[in-house]
View 1 (cartoon, helix red, strand yellow):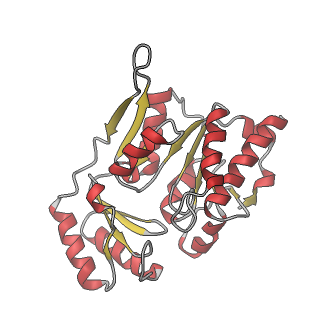
View 2: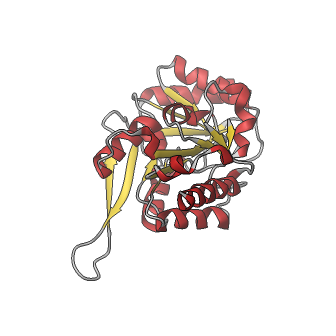
Length: 268
């Protein structure tokens, strides 16, 4: 991973789309700090397309699409995308639009029930995420969002159980997300960029910021991917790393990434 200073002005100027994880990338200790939220506005006001890509649930995505300065949000690790379109005429309110991944299966699938039962029996301390009620397609098992914080090895055990039962599973900094169907953050991101914005596949037009192993497909795909500094905690568990890394963690690190991109674009 290179320091952000190594990103050239030409590279920064070619970026059209800024995608980012939320937990521990935009947030710090579970909160959205002012610098990170300001960074979203600054990117938006500069004319860049801003799109969170998260494991968080559909219920969160409804709020994010409506109230944050974003051009869409991809949730549940690629199961869905929500965005707003302008209303017609005068003072009409914008309309929320939704797209669901055709490969996504609802989270009442029998295999997911078996996985939960095995996880609770075989990995003491694992528990349902508190936002499970707002999810449509996956189940999220909490190992680090709330106390007691369990070791990453416990999350690895849960992922192994899920895969043995035929499910997909990704480990974030706080949850193990488990779903049926072949899709992920990357496939839905590319689908959304093409359908919504006519993206022709130029990988250097996309910058993704992330922090943890479930972001590896995005790190591998986009040559200008950036990590916030806490990505270093997961190096022993990852094979693919972002091209650039911030010096700060969490939301402050994302603000550093945004500021660097905008400054270098202005210098070109």
